[in-house]
Image 1: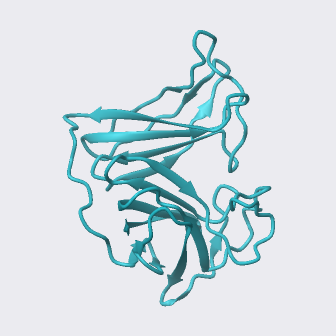
Image 2: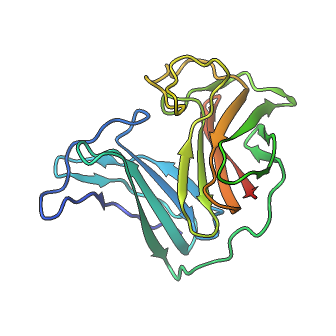
Length: 228
């Protein structure tokens, strides 16, 4: 099934729509689209028009209830994430993950391994991530959107959202939060082993996607992590 959503707006009632945004990870707006059962995942980037509207056709793979997270930094108001719930076809709430996944996930020709799928809640938790291709550390990884791979986490209970970026020990150009001070060159090489710091605010199950660029493609390795 292919349906489109072509309009996302930030409003400043009763003023006009905001027309100026701060670039974050090479984009003005990151749009995360997930199905209610947290199986489908898209990370796309609408274009901002002069009228203050972001537009982008989106293809939905099947009828379902979808949650769309608009992650942006309007100039002035600052960082904001808004969630939109959209029913495609006869979309309705669906069962979400009920148990942890394996520590290994396949994404195209790559195998991605997490150091653990059980972590402590309410603590800064470093997770080691290793990417292999054909049984060896992947040597063809490159920055995605100006940074190392991206990690998106959605709480399976209340659908709260987190977005983080892995790093390596001693990585240059990182702020205290792990954010890049400047975008990496797209031709740079990303190491096959990285650490991502996540702080899960409460106990429960979280669906996470480790999204990275390998060779000529972009891949997302899915996991279900339990915070205790």
